[in-house]
Image 1 (cartoon, one colour):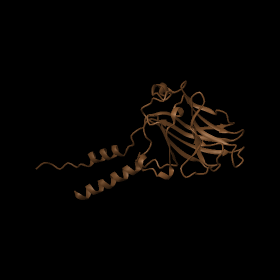
Image 2 (cartoon, one colour):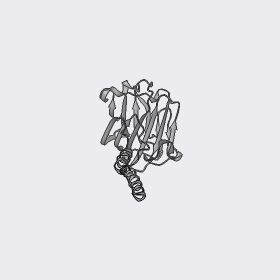
Image 3 (tube, one colour):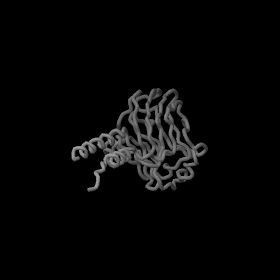
Image 4 (tube, one colour):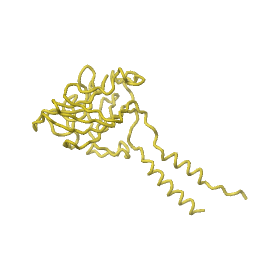
Length: 231
C-alpha cells in the first residue's frame, strides 16, 4: 500500500499563488497629491520629456497609433470652485495635451456636474454633481485603436470591467485627434478655484477584476477545511 501523502502543502501553495493579484504594467504613478489652480494649462504631471523609457512615444500614444489601451486611475477633490456662478465660471480636469487641449475628464466650464470636454463638452452618465470637498474616483480607458475613451465614475475595482454598472459608465467615441497626447496635465480654475488630484496611475493593463488578497485566502482556507474533513 502506498503511504498517504497529504495534498495540503500543494493546495496551500496553489491557493496562495492564485490569490495573489497579477501585477499591472504601471507606466506612471503619482502616489501623493498634486494641486491644480489658477486656470490656464495647469500642471503637467508627465510628458514626452520625462516619461520613463519614453513610453508615450514608444507606444505610439503621441501619434494616435497605439494598439494597447491605457488605463488612467485617479481621485479628484474639488476644494474651491471660486468663480462659479451657477451656470459657469469654474472647470477642472485631468487632460491630454498635444499642441493644445485634447481630451479631458473632470468638470466643464458651463456645468455643475462631473463630465469633461474634448470633441465637445459632455457630462458623465447620470449627470452626477460634484460636491466641493468630496473626493471622487475615476478610471478612464483610452483606446486609440477604437478611437474611444471610456470613463467609470466611482467604480468597484474588484469587479471585472464588463461587470461595471452601465449607470457609472460613459463612452466617448469618434475622438479623432483628441485621443493623441504628448503631455498629461491636471487643471482647475478660474483664478483661485482649485482641485487636489491624488493616486494618479497610468497602466497598460486593466485595473479591474483584481481580487483582494484576503478574499482569495479565505476561499482557500474554506477549501482546506473541506479536504481535512474528507480525511
